[in-house]
Image (cartoon, each protein chain N blue to C red):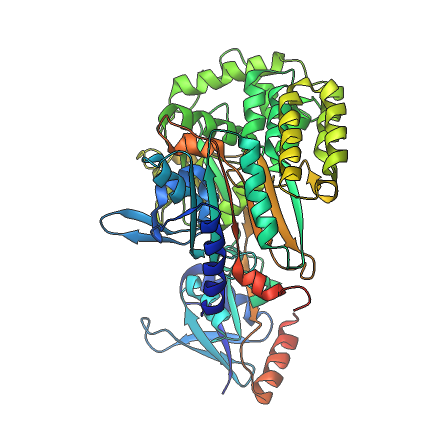
Length: 361
Length: 230
């Protein structure tokens, strides 16, 4: 496979990132698998190439740059920092064998505590400018608004944690909501377990690492959960309404402010969105025409936890987005060993830009 | 050249396959010594028998080195990416039934559904600092099943045999394996989750979609399939 033209375009993009103040960095292609497995779970194996090293154990052909760039920064990068990089990433394509399994990314990442919304706007505006001659349409979202809505639900801490854990798995999230709202019949096995005075009496010998105390702990948790009142139909309706918000930014903002009356926990996140819109406008982005979808970025199984964006081709609906990015503050905390820093960034795929071509070219 | 039919080379799967073809007027037999994997086909001309390990038949079908093959649905779906575009299911043969299931220790009285397994996995990870291990050799099928079931915080560990023993041996917390009667599971103090299995498998006759054919082979193949009534 030849990456020649894509590599040239990536180098040109990187030069623009450098002009915007980024320092070029390089990352190893072979990455320790354990870090990525811990972050993404077993599902990453279906999407990345895993290989074996006799001394270093399981390694992965880098599926993206963000994780190694964050690790590098957390090991002692200066603050604030802007990085850029270009190189191959590798993705297994079991579901889409027609898609490239090896392609170039050109990325830009900002680590800056000063003004997160301004940093969001900086990255988005830079990408919008780099892509202005291509037939693409931008979409934006904000995982932080969703998180805030779940955090504010009037239910147990345990239920909120379960929902947050599955925020990126819409089907599972929906099933949990239905159950916590009391709309799903309780499985007979659960009813029997809760009715039993001592469910462990007469049970088979315990084998394996999961101990009796863990089983008893969960049974207690299940009893507590059964006593927990259902999430109200009203709250579920508000959450549904929130997930359906899909408008241009000004209308979305208005809609979210309305919803914040019923879901007060989203207030601060909505105001962050408002500040971001202002910062985008200040950088010349046509916010009145920019789309905002509350559910955007939810299925990509990424590490984004705030602003998310993507640029999709308007001429080739079959292609994945040509550029994607977002905010990943929590990732810096997970990889930072106690330290954390607000961070936002994104990548452009030059191969896809070449495939769609410049407008009028 | 001839139409190549791949059949499991030993055991009950081979005998039952021979019976199934015989009932339709096509006699398959092993020839030569007991140890030699050569076979003969009577009742139709231009068909040759290729005796293979059941596990190799999916690969041979995908490569187009055999035109037809008998093997379990589990093996085809585990080993062939986009299997429906590679092979066509011509007939289920009514034997070799086995379910691919997820099983946990019987003592886990609090775990009966995938929902329970997910909750247990989350708590296990918080307690032990590692993801709950599930031993299997069916990595793709099980991963896909657990993803659809919304289970997170688990890790698959490879087990090519004696998988039921991995929990007692502390190399896994749960397993995903093929079972027909469940006896081995019970003997190892394991229970099947109260859910649809990952897959219900049985011996199946497959046609390779990409196997090259001469005109003569094409004619033989249609005659054979007509004889078999599939």
